[in-house]
Length: 635
Image (cartoon, rainbow, N blue to C red):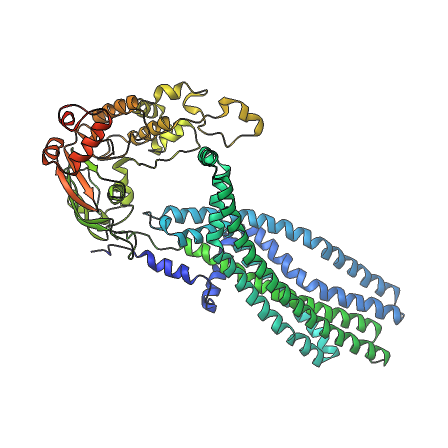
């Protein structure tokens, strides 16, 4: 027996901890290895050139300082012209390399970013696609982590690699200059090196604060984006203007923006104060070193060339140590952000998968819910409470209930988007947790209450119901005919190849209706039905409010189309239009998560319970009475 429910709380608890605890060195090492392997996999040749260039650049400042010393000492000591020329040529070559290295480094880094970004995005959304159910997509903390993974996943591997290489490069520079400095004054070399300790510690702390801030402001940024969408998209434009809510929504958006800005301001001020303090420490150390060098030169203990090397060494060591601290801090920050990417791409399944999946055969006996209890999280209310239902093969089950009664949750459990907290969903007596979810879903056709509008062509909108039909126009048109949308689609500017959107074109194209059209709500609903009908004879057909957006005539037409299509199929029909449910083999009423009534239309009317009351209310709305509801068809 496999574990029946994966606790979303495990990941949620990890997310809640966020970035409060420092990652152990072993974990950091694993993250660095993962990031470097990702970069190496994305662009191995580019990476090799980048590594050689970065490490070579670390030795250039030291080499240039010593070549400069050789030139100055040679001039002061009357060195041979040939020797001075050779040193000058070497200095010129080193200068050209130093001058061109940053441009070449930027070019290679941009190439790495593009390659790594492509591979990282592919791996991220491959991992997201592996989530079997909906738990992750209903978890705000995980969505924050996913957002950060999308924003930083393509860049942080290169940043981690940059940090590693930058650390190695500056370590080469520091080693060279410290060695040079040690030759002149061991004590001063130790002092300069010691001044780097608070610098490094401060930079690391700032990096952690920065990463923690980005995590904390995630909800506010998400709300700000939500309000900006409401203010700038056509979906909400009508209500925003009719009800005059623009100012209110704008105020909320700006309040969240101010929250984000305030957090960033505090972080920037902290960094400013820390950086100013570090700069003062560096200036004091450099001043001490310069004073010693001037006195030593005046006393004749060192040459002019050695003064140049010494000054370059002090400045070089301080600059390199500051760079080293910044590189380590940047790599540390990148690792903290890379954690979000790794957490998403390595997340365990949101629903348990049977090690050896049982085959999903054609439905012969039926689907059964046996003592099913469900709630969305351990602390939330029960949505379903001990539901027992059986849908015989070939029969139609109609589900009736008020909003929030648990009808749509029932659909999610049948599709195995969630698992019951307790109880079982059986397919011909086999618990659906023991079968492959992908195989199960291939045997299910569904129209959801919140069906999708895809900004694709009409043909693609339908073909997404079964991708094998992308190149089979006959199947697509047959599904459209069944849904009653074929004539509408053929009348479009480019027929089935017309884009059902107006968002992908240049401004000059937007005046041409042939570049894309927008369907009405009822037409979109028929398109969603066609998408469900595309699957050839699904074993289980689920229709959740399939005619809610249609006018009375269209609803009547779709009702009869669905009635013909459902004949002989196992189906679940959910609708608030009770007249469309009369022909179901079994009607159940759900209230407060329980099945409170069950039977045929006639038996439920005779029972004079909730179903009768709801049916009579709708019948009276059409001008009928409670009595007439018993004898007339309600369309």
